[in-house]
Image (cartoon, rainbow, N blue to C red; front, side, top):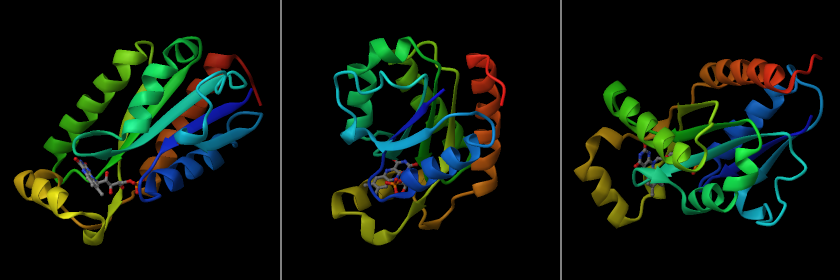
Length: 176
Ligand SMILES: Cc1cc2nc3c(=O)[nH]c(=O)nc-3n(C[C@H](O)[C@H](O)[C@H](O)COP(=O)(O)O)c2cc1C
């Protein structure tokens, strides 16, 4: 089996998380795991070679990045024919806001991929310099999504990748 991890990232954290998931998946399933930017996946037949897909996007302004949202609608049919998992990367400041963002992002994906097998939200990384002034204002208005630093919890990433690896193995009825 071959697996696609399709990534939408503005400042590379989502890509790094996707790469970590790929390395971890390789210990659960046979076959290649490709991590590719969503923008480089052809609209026509782009996911045809893959038997399972994980889609990951950074959260900006309380939603997925535009190329990730476009991918979900453009690839709705091929995605419906494969097992699909998804993850979001953000910096929610409280457990409550994290739960809200997790729920909202999952609902966004499910609109295009109703058979979605699983979704999670990982803490990401943000520096003050990444914010242009209108976004800095947004952060001021929504302080629950405002904090700065590296919050990536690699153990959480590994845990989720292990779980998905086992579910993938079961879904594809393969054994290593
Ligand atoms: C312009 C901008 C807007 C953001 N908006 C949100 C947001 O609404 N909610 C959130 O949890 N994180 C938000 N973040 C934080 C990013 O999701 C976080 O930095 C993540 O790690 C980005 O991943 P990337 O490095 O792959 O782009 C925002 C970051 C930027 C730069």
